[in-house]
Amino acid sequence: MRVAINTGGGDAPGLNAVVRAAVLAAERRGWDVVGIRRGYDGLFMDDGVVSLTTGSVRGITHLGGTILGATNRGNPFSFPVRQADGGIRMVDRSDEVVSRMQELKIDCLIAVGGDGSLGIASELANKGLKVIGVPKTIDNDLPGTTFTFGFHTAVQTATDAIDKLHSTAQAHQRVMVVELMGRHVGWIALFAGFAATADVILIPEIPYDLTRVAAKIEARWREGSEFAIIVVAEGAMPKGGEASYLEEVGKGGRRRLGGVGKRISRRLEELTGHETRSLVLGHLQRGGRPIAFDRILSLLFGTAAIRLAEQGRFGCMVALDAPTVTAVPLADAARATKSVPVDGDMVMAARAMGISFGD
Ligand code: F6P
Image (cartoon, rainbow, N blue to C red; front, side, top):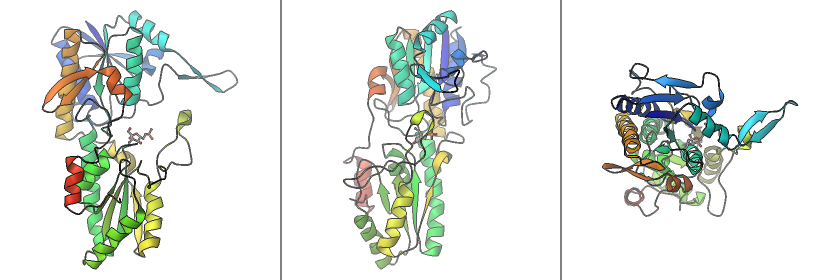
């Protein structure tokens, strides 16, 4: 058996642990493993496919990033190719992926990614490739798995940051607004806001009304707590309104979420009269070492992917159905988004403790 592994999309803490676990589990079965660099791009590069052995993955479990590199612009079904006139044309190179994999005598691809990369993997499976998916994203927005790896590390980073904001907010009697990642779901904001006892948590699943947020802030001042911490997910939106996007678009014309923290901070200062500052935690949430939970999940996922390959269960994604590691159809996982249940335990517990969702 010859297995290829790639890490596509944005990075997430735990990618290296998945790679190491898969390589060790495969080698113990006498299989060969190669790594494809930068998602699928490596297949089109001269030095883009590297042999992975116990030696080459030694000492990487605790490291952030990915030794294979990642890209979120490397869709082989719509691949940017520079033209003679300097322009860019999007070209379908998926057939080349399939033939390159045959040339390399790859029996199975382990695609470690989020919805974009797993969507690509699922389309490649439709073209006959034997694929197994591993769910990665700090956003935790993939259905079929209780958690994706990388999520808890992002939550820890955000929680630590919010803890630090408490003391400075209190010292200066300020309202601090912190904007967290998560795309169109509020998992990071909810978990970190709950863990760090924010006063208000704004998530896309519960559109907000800033007069309600202002009322919560004023209540705190009245009760003698003259500071407030507002956690806002980057995809949060006002009732009847839209999410905030940055003016500049990303490469490939992608609109990028951002700006909600600043927007609500200005308005809250007007509404309450209290000095309000905002910050964006940004890519800090994706960086650094995976915490123990994510390392464990990544190691479980990496070895489970090899087990599925051994059983011939292609077209699946490994998943956590806590406490069991299981498998779900890859196509299902790539198709939908897992949102925060607005009547779930954590939202209910937060409300019970007086945390406002701005509704
Ligand atoms: O999907 C992970 C994520 O970090 C999102 O939370 C965020 O919106 C996005 O990626 C940022 O992507 P980029 O690094 O391409 O700007």
